[in-house]
Length: 103
Ligand SMILES: [Zn+2]
Image 1 (cartoon, rainbow, N blue to C red):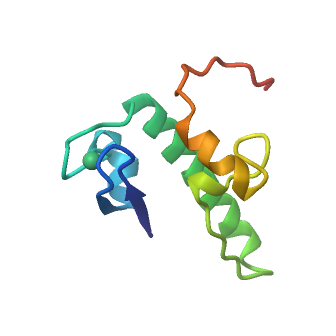
Image 2 (image 1 turned 120 degrees about the vertical axis):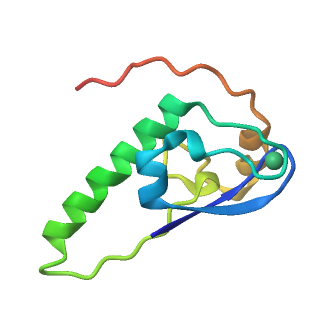
């Protein structure tokens, strides 16, 4: 499974293998401008994707599943609901996220 990335900083496109990134979250850096993502955030994301895979494994006995996950097209409340908001969303300053989710 390959994850595709586009660097917001320089526009470079690159790909990383799911298992590589799961084992080494520090690998998420732009090959062109060397900008990096927060390693803990990548770790959390990959852990969550790993959980998705584990769950799909159960469901695939009954159904084949395919879905696309794009950071610019996340369902509410994570992303803009329509195209118009997408630009503003991308320009928003990235703020430190606080843990607010109820377990
Ligand atoms: Zn870059």
